[in-house]
Structure formats: C-alpha cells, structure tokens
Image (cartoon, rainbow, N blue to C red; front, side):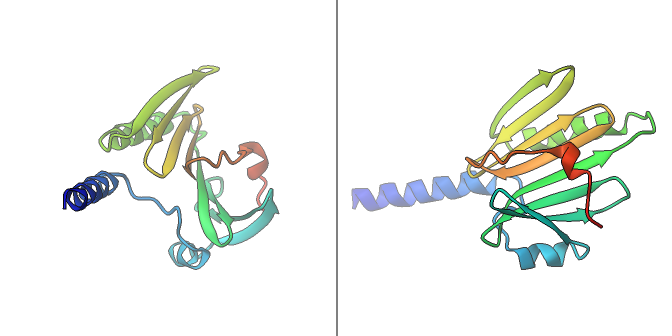
Amino acid sequence: MKRLIIFIFSFIFASALYAQEPGTNLRKTLSQIQQQFPNLKYNRDDKGYNIYNSAAEDRDFTSFYFKNGTLVGEYTYIFDYSGSSYINDLYHSLINNFAKYGGKHYRTTNSGYDITYFRYSYFTVKFANYGNQLQIYYELNGLNIEIRPYIERRLRY
C-alpha cells in the first residue's frame, strides 16, 4: 500500500511539473507539422535527419529536423536589417516569457552576442541574439544536432 501511494504521488508530481513547461512541436509527426505549416518543403537529408523548411517571409524561415518521421529539432531564424530594436525587444520578451516556466536557465555571451538556454524535462530551447538576427532552437535533450545557420540560409525553393 505504501508503494502504491508513493507511486501515485510521484506520478502526480511528475505530471504537474510537465504541465508547467512551455508547449513545443517536438515529437510531432511529419504529417502533423505539415498541417500546421502548409508551405513546408523538403530541403535535404543530412547526418540521418530529414530536413524541411517553412519560409514565413523572404528572409525569415524555420527548419524542421525529423528522425524516423518524428520532429526532433526546430530552428527559427528571424532577420531585421532595418536597424530598429525589434530583434532585441523580441529576444528579451521571449526570455521573460520562458523564465516564467522555470526549467534550468543559463545565459552566456559569445563575442558580444547574447545566448540564453532553458532546459526542461525532455527538450532544450536556445535563444541567440546576433543583433540583426534572432535564432530560436528547440531540440530534444541529448541530441546536440550540429547547427549550421549560414548554410541553412541557402534554401532550395
């Protein structure tokens, strides 16, 4: 009886923790993502991943990394060359919103650029502010997919 009570308490506690995490598209199937992003197009296969892209604007786009038909990484690139504070404002707004969910949070500066990570139960999200470019990475924990943003910019459309 004692084990049953401990099991039930552990299950409820774990469910409550998971419910307080931000939503994500990770672990969805290719067909589910295609319904959400009707302009999704196949780009290429690379290191065992099937990569699809969805272009929202001329320069802004999202890359989706699938493994065995399941989404394991989602990478969004937002560009602003107008000189406005849009990228910086968006970066800080996203950081503040994700901080509300808790999770392991750490921030680093690389060559003067701000990079912030949030680690949750099954995924990590990274926000990278490069001045005129914001990169947002969602990735299942433990994958460490090699990101090559400057190569990714050369889309096949």
